[in-house]
Image (tube, rainbow, N blue to C red; front, side, top):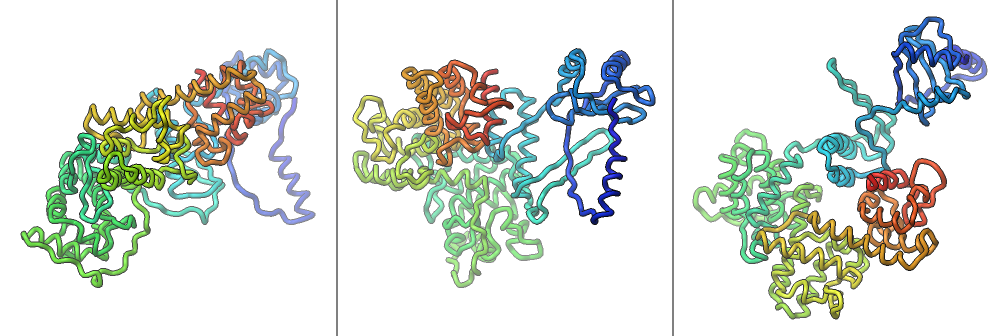
Length: 582
């Protein structure tokens, strides 16, 4: 019997130490360990007898704490109640007792362990869950991670949240206090509102373009027709509440009139670009908004900078111009000398950023659409637009799958609208002479490009509306995943399974397809998440043995770096491989 006298040992150590030196300050932290509670009398009797434990008072329950974190067994702690006596489970215990303890599994309904995954990558991972309950549990985790990212951009940090019928407790510890900063969450931007607004704007065919008069360029009917800003704003009446209408107004106004992409309408030329039709659409959606939001300076605080991102320095000009429009007059141009210097931070709101990135499609329609379908200038203009936005590694070519996949459908549709033979007439089909590099698309990406672009163009022709950004349609995503897996399977036929050549081949495929940051290895959680199940299953099939033999598991030597997976991502890769095998 080994009884652990924690208090006595600690006091004795401190007493002897205090005679030699002053005891320094200590750091507080917390740990969590699985605990099993045994209340069955027969089991209590059996455990006490077999482990030679004799409490001073016969217990009505036992708690066994897995302090070693390797499953319940030797060297863990047992606490007897009601006497609260503490015992260490002996190193040598009967096999029958170990069998009982090995059957104790933590009843954790939801748990995720991973590398430092961003909230965006986490959202992608959670979104792939098919079970509604698992998605809901993951959504709670996503909200926590996003909140931490917003207000604490540092490591480490630990937190605890518990809630029951009485109340709740919340604790934060192990964090760097200077790194805590209040960053308010914008309650007008829930994900559901963003999705509804973008869907509404797509439904009316509005895509922001780079121009000074705020004309949105439509991709309806494969690029034919123009949708003005006021029509897009009138679509706000289709939205169910004022929060969504404000979000739509902010998205359209910044997308069309924030000419310097500063994150606010804060220059004379920008406020003058708003036509009377635009002011009228705003008045229709928000009656008496000039007074309600404080534009008139009559007493209500000015919140136009919050709800519309029309900065304080152009407030007076905005009021003057809108009032003239409402009186049926043509507003006078704003004198730039009357406008104070802008103070915007130069950051577009996330929801607006997601939308205005489609201006690449507008540029193609504006610039390339005027050059003729067989002109070399057409290809040069398109290449310049694609390269400036989607060449992530600045190699001068779109030579990685991630670059092709990041191009929104609207861009492919704009190319089709300005070139009737796109994409088939540009040599993307196998066996044809390939001039696609004129567009900056590397030859090795011709299959990926054909699949991506043709799916987008066909979807546009069938529905007459543009697709979301930058998501790949489910059918196309499955096709591309299968294509990558098939390429690995074909290449692996000529090498010995598990050989150095096999490992080199797999590493080349994984890094070439999924190394998002160009580091030469899959060393980011986002990169591991991006590898689809068909690819993991194909790698295992060509290896001829479970990938656990390469160290994808909790124990043993790790060889996964030989196929391009950094050891820092061992745990998340193991989880993904096991999940794909289920």
